Image 1 (cartoon, rainbow, N blue to C red):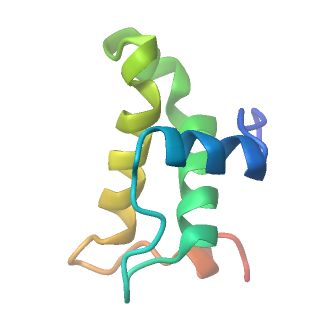
Image 2 (image 1 turned 120 degrees about the vertical axis):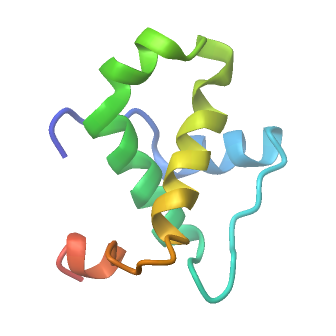
Amino acid sequence: MVPKAPWSRDQWKQAMEQHELDLVHEPCYNSCALWVTMEMVMSDSSDTLKKYVAEEDMFKAVYDLAVDKLTDKDGKFMVRKYFGL
């Protein structure tokens, strides 16, 4: 990803636990899909998000946007297809 996303898998998991956010939502996503989608959102949209979202709210905002993509009723976003997996 360009630019590189900000969290290693361990850093991300610690932040998820700290914020008490769900890692899995069957059948929509597992923790791997959620992590890479949050990384994608940060890589693609962090500059825009910083204009509107306070730093202390950024992680939860990115989480919500990633969940939106992964649970979209249209089913247009397929994380495995997007990343070629």
